[in-house]
Image (cartoon, rainbow, N blue to C red; front, side):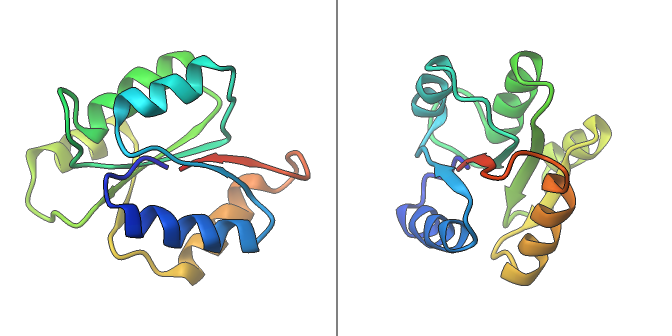
Length: 124
């Protein structure tokens, strides 16, 4: 998951690891690009819509889907009135509101990872 809020990254990291998920996190697009360039093959990429830098979360997901088409792409946002939300919906990305309900997250992870490797990787 990519989120510029260190507290959110820390909370998600602890939650996902407690569920036995291998977690990788980044505060921005360039840091996430570096992780992906090292051969990380995430099954799920959670990305905040609003990030520092040139690209927003939607632009990052669109770019990463080219090189990682097997990864589920999830856009996280606290913004309810953004043109990017309409673009994300048109592109078929799952939109999750922040703050995220941990129970909903667990249901989604189980659904997506059913039948996959015993230790899934989540880019966070």
